[in-house]
Image 1 (cartoon, one colour):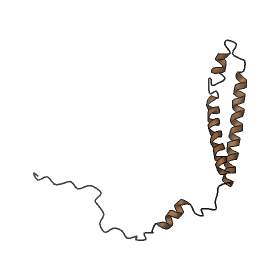
Image 2 (tube, helix red, strand yellow):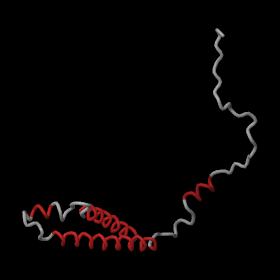
Image 3 (tube, helix red, strand yellow):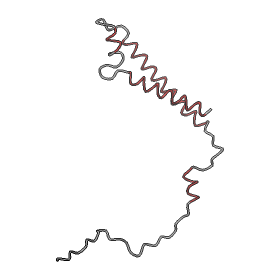
Image 4 (tube, helix red, strand yellow):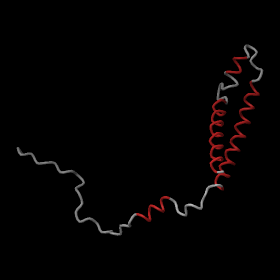
Length: 118
């Protein structure tokens, strides 16, 4: 069930991206570019309905996307793992409790070899 929900979320995300890109921005989009030029000089037929459809479709897909994301959390199989991968990795690695400072630290400025001529 979880896989089906993830596939639906992916399809809706792709469709919503396409719908958002087709919407008009500041000066065009689908209603101003393609539909407006296809109608010729009269140009006013169908422009507003295209923008209304894309706007409503984006809203519906956005709401569906959010709802599916919330529902997907309830279908995650939690019985197989009791700890996260980070917690499991922490149990495998030994803890270094040696807090002593090193006796000699490397020089902050690299030493340059002395010239033999000077």
